[in-house]
Image 1: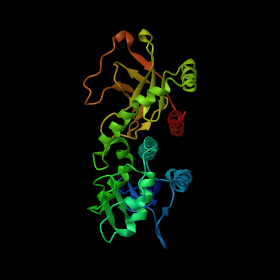
Image 2: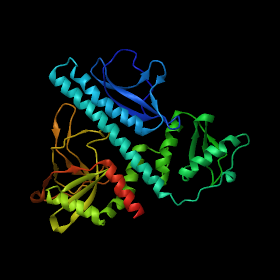
Image 3: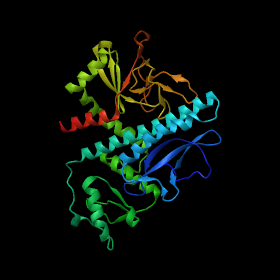
Image 4: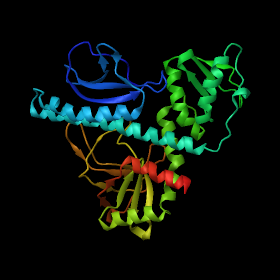
Length: 348
């Protein structure tokens, strides 16, 4: 989470992006990406002089504002009095920052939708059956409302009452948790993680990796869908043997008539999520790794070809024979399409 810092000195704003503020229900704050005097970029809360931080009560309006504002901010970038090489470096860093924010938001929204769908048939408790401590009767209806949408969560925060509760048994909510910024983040992540039988307080990167692995069989189901197979066949006719869709890669393997396989999108190294994608690049595969690193552009402008590998927990990937090395183009499908595809598989 970004901190609620406000820039105390005038700095050029080069981009913006919203972030949900987990300490309050349904609040998104807008953050500006500013160029500091030392040449580094950093996020600062956008503050309106008269009414405090700029906030939104829904994500749609926040994203609409961010995307239209970023188009306008391109003029600010062009006006920077910087050497050409330095300006290009800053431009790449800005693009990378926005890509990182967008990818993370898309992925977590997708996982939240899937978590809710996995429990759509779960029984919901009656409000009168919820066990609460004496004196906390005012929490009964708010808690009941949360459990109607997220019946699986074990941790619920009530900003209005400055209380966070932990579920002990099915309907026993008599235990309080520490009510602070850290548990606010845990409560927000709980809505995703607990939908996959994981805890919102666990390491978030490992939790999301586990969720991707859980959803892998679901992605394989798409290969049995006639409409999706037609889309992949069309891509193959156009020479595309790699189709990126959400956090998954549909990969066409020619040797031994294997056909289409599922791999996962990986990162070049820890903490590098959100590289600027090099769309004209290709993927050069020397092994049968389950992760695909897409071509990207480094902050210094260097172009890096894509490749395949295993994760650090998988051991070394099985090598291809040099005669079977492949260099493949790829295409990326819009994130919303992935939601639609998985939704169709869910309700078909």
